[in-house]
View 1 (cartoon, one colour):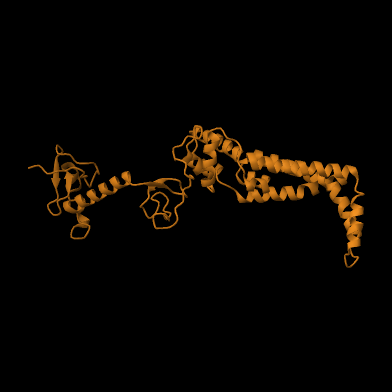
View 2 (spheres, rainbow, N blue to C red; view 1 turned 90 degrees about the horizontal axis):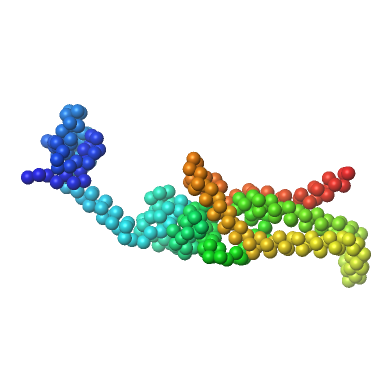
Length: 314
């Protein structure tokens, strides 16, 4: 009577055993070995476990095989979720992601979170899947993936409050350096154009400083003085307001589309560059950078004054 060796491995060479192999069994625990492997070491490869709870047992081994098989079948049939931290898929019933170890809040009864925002993981965004794009975007990927899917279908307009309030900071925060530099230049130009009006305005206000209690008559006098601001300063201030508002509305309406194009083109470049570690490149070039956001805000806040100060020296 032949012994079923299906799924059994030689503990020496780790190769699977088959019925036509020359197999011997340990006289103490029954562990199967290739005869050549057994003779090579001169004893059971699992001798250190003899007499312990870890001792080889065909019954125990078969039970473990059945358990592994059941888990594998379950993983193939049950719903899968995407880890928000490493963006790998795993069964929804797992308590933690088997890839990065992060807890599965949804599986433990917590609030579920879909980093793809309802977009299928294999949805084609233009040579790049939604899963790849989400892994590149990282933070707020659940917001951007549905918009990316809309842009793939032909749309270009989408409102972004962060891009409206902080166009230069938002673009640099998302590592869109060209767009960020363009936004900085436009905001700096607006700041410089506003300075002649701001200087005359501040001069008028300083003349009324220190007068004690401000009365209605004081406000009337200030208003009359504001009317004396030069026409050139007023025109420049209107142009400044137009440039700033145009910049804000442009990035608010088209910022998400610019980010979509940036994401797709960068991912295509990463995927085509076979010499680089793709995952490492995605982590390096994707995601967001809070420091760059602060840099953008500081530059647009102080650069106009610095430029005007330097210009005044010549």
